[in-house]
Length: 255
Ligand SMILES: Nc1ncnc2c1ncn2[C@@H]1O[C@H](COP(=O)(O)OP(=O)(O)O)[C@@H](O)[C@H]1O
Ligand SMILES: [Mg+2]
Image 1: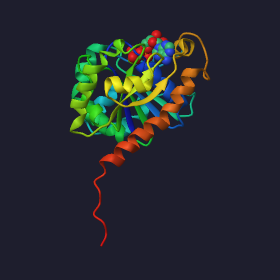
Image 2: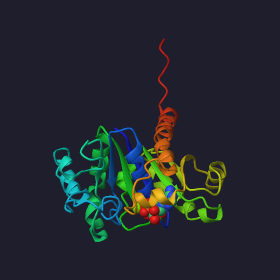
Image 3: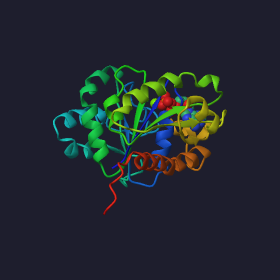
């Protein structure tokens, strides 16, 4: 019943790594959906040591969503991130970015479908400035997070137009947005003041765990990245609840 999407402004601040760490640490059930128009990262990264079918994922599910049969098709498109417990599932993204245009008509239906599911859905939406960003899916989200690396206030400048664009895109649908800081540098308070946007959470700079999550090296399930990603769940839930509280229409008092 909760769709949380994450995007980046420019560069590769760590959207895919952060969301994978979240999917592996959040209390289950959770579904990581690779909606990045530039292509998925899981099959060639974290899951690369397994022989997995390459024909599953967002593309066939998009076709099913347009035909109104996504609920029946979903299970067959997923890969279990956790053996075969079916609690931490992943929907692999596009194998070829050239297919992103064909997803465009399906983002609304996919967003509505994800938002209706029981598990929390974490949507990796890639770069906002990429061709064919999944804007209609962002508008169906309960929270949109912009990942940034806050090495210094100066390096945050690409986030300024991205925040403005997100605010424009999300205003009518009244979807809250916030920042996730990947790694250290400027403090959350400084970044929030500088960018005039709330900081929902921070994840630790942890190259060893990040490399393991990209399929290089093993383990480090207890590294700082995993611990801080796990904490994002409560922070995201609090941001969603705060927004709902602010925007609830007051009921007239009973007479
Ligand atoms: N918290 C982190 N600590 C250290 N390195 C990270 C972290 N998050 C991501 N990285 C590294 O940064 C690079 C880009 O990460 P990725 O998640 O693919 O970014 P994006 O999805 O935003 O393009 C990868 O090499 C990844 O290992
Ligand atoms: Mg990515």
